[in-house]
Amino acid sequence: MKKEKKEKKEKKSVDKELKKKKAQSEKKNESAKKPEPAPMAASEDDSVSTEKTTSTKALPAKTIDDVLSLMKVNAEIYQNIITAPLDFKAGDQTISLFPSELKTLEIIGQTPGINLTQLSIELDISKSAVSKCTGKMLEKSLLNKKPSPTNIRQVQFFLSEDGQAAFEQYLQLDLFKPLSNAFETLKDEDSDKLLTFLKAISKQLDEIAKGLPAQS
Image 1 (cartoon, rainbow, N blue to C red):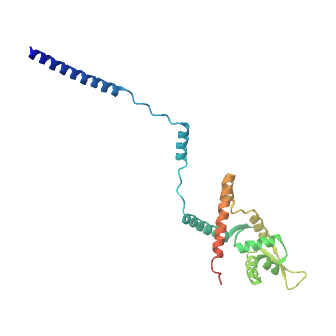
Image 2 (image 1 turned 45 degrees about the vertical axis):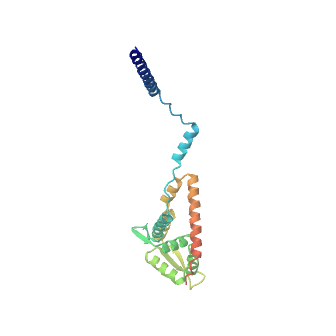
Image 3 (image 1 turned 30 degrees about the vertical axis):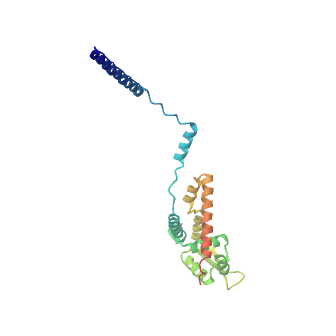
């Protein structure tokens, strides 16, 4: 009798333990089946903040060496442009004129009858340099010279027919027209920034030049 009671008691204990394990297992399964909470939607402020962070990514900075290198190249190109001879059609021939000859052509074209002394003042060069320049232009049949009616020791210079043709072509010339066209494509604010930047560079270069030893 005692043995039967003991067996019943052990059986109840086993059944109780099995029920407990079953309950724990069911609870664990229910917990696993529950959907995970959805991530919180980004607020409008968060969206704006993210957009700003992306759009304001810093661009690689150009070094001063890059700027100076580009300036040097442009200065050399500009110097080549303004010192190169230019060709003009005059009758059946093509005449090449250097900058000094073009300046002389321009002054004589604007002030016919100018004399050598006056040309020297206008060109800011010596009389001998003016004489050499006008001599070459006389050889190219661009000038005519006549004695001064008021001073027999002086001569006056006039443009010849070929000289007048070259002068008129020169007045129509615009070497930097492509550069002007490119500048016109810029927005007003961009052109203002560019001019401000170039002026700042010019000012700094002037300060550097002033600090250099004077050339003898």
